[in-house]
Image (cartoon, rainbow, N blue to C red; front, side, top):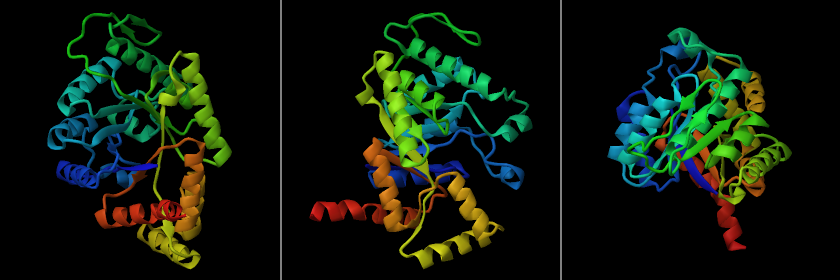
Length: 312
């Protein structure tokens, strides 16, 4: 299993520092989310740069690491804008750019900027049409696309570099199906082992039904990790984080459980990720604030089981 990082930094300089660090550590990818605000309430005032502009800069200031937008809400931009942004950044990055597309979930960022936030059913319908539009525009040769929301008239669009798509989200049925039909990577958030395996099966079944090779689909997951060496140290960690965020350890644990955050002792977290890998996951994006020392510790702890296996 390979590791990548995903961070929502503040300034462009911070994004660049994080991307260059990830590249120097030979991580699989550097990912950023596409948000107009990074949360609700006070969090909405945090600096939030345009993800595509940031990626264009990183494309020229890194050289080997894969660059991923994880993910862009379909509500923000017409698919034609995604097409042109992606074609431009992919050319600037020499093929290292991967576009993630999702339905969007943070209603507050839509209301603050006056962007429509349709019901879930419509957002999924728009997401599927946007994915079909992207595939049509980047096809060789391009083909027409016509849907209820978007239309594309095929022409010899230039530039037209290789399109690399990620479909990600928490949906257990529609998200995997869309990934299998259109994407190069399914980013499925952590879940119980049988649920995680079922999502992968749905994605691969959809790929096969669409005439694609199921084995070519990269399966990844993302999340923060809460871990310590012992149970007592884990409880102390919860106390520390709860104090820093003006909440209680019980509420923090409940939220982590709701999000299926890999947590507990390092051994328990390694077992959780190993179970996901056994189901088919081959990449995990470590989410959170960019802290090189903390990330390096996580990578060291998470690789210990692999070292033990190699010695057996």
